Structures are given as structure tokens and as C-alpha cells.
Amino acid sequence: MGTARQHDTPDELIPRPERSAGALRAALARIAPTRLDEMQRTMDDAFSRAIDEKSLTPIQAWLLLWARDIEIARRRDLRVRYQHAQNVLTSFDKGEHDDEGAVNHALAEISAVLDEAQQAVRG
Image (cartoon, rainbow, N blue to C red):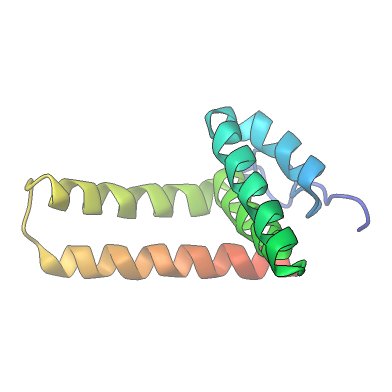
């Protein structure tokens, strides 16, 4: 897989990890340790599905999903955009506003952040 890159900007908390279970787990432990149990549960599920399906696809999908989520967490630009959009949706769900335009913009922003992060980790 090669070595992890160095920081591209000062807005990166850590360098982008390699797309391996160990590297992703180590990165998550540094930037979002409260999600480690979730990571383990989803990894266990991916490995079970891989065995059942006799396919590596569930494991590859798991690695890509966590690489994407870590990309968002490690990069301030993506993290801020994602969190702001999530806050708009949460406040709408709580009845704090009824701005459907803001909700649509927030949904589009979340999609854009996810796409940008996914493209970044795919190289």
C-alpha cells in the first residue's frame, strides 16, 4: 500500500492513513476515539458478510467507508462543512426552523462532502 502522505495543509489533524484496517484504526484512535467501538462492530459485520458471500467486496467497502469518514474527521475544511450541515438538519428535526431551502442545501452539502472525501481517499 505504500506509506501515508505527509500533511497537505495545517488544517489536517493527521496525515491521511493507508487504507488498511490497522492504519485506519490507529488514525481513528487519534482523531475520533469515541467511534472505535462502532468501527469494530462494522468490521465484524463486514467480515461475516464476506465469509457468507465468499467475497472480499464487503471488506473493501468497509475499508473505503472508514477511509472516507476518517478523511472528513482529519480535514478541518470537510469536518466544518459536514458538521454545519448536520446542525442545520438537527435543528430542523427539532422544530427549531422550517426552512426547507436550508435543509435542501444542507443535504446537498453533506453529499458534496462525502463525495469529496471519497474521491480523496480513492486517489
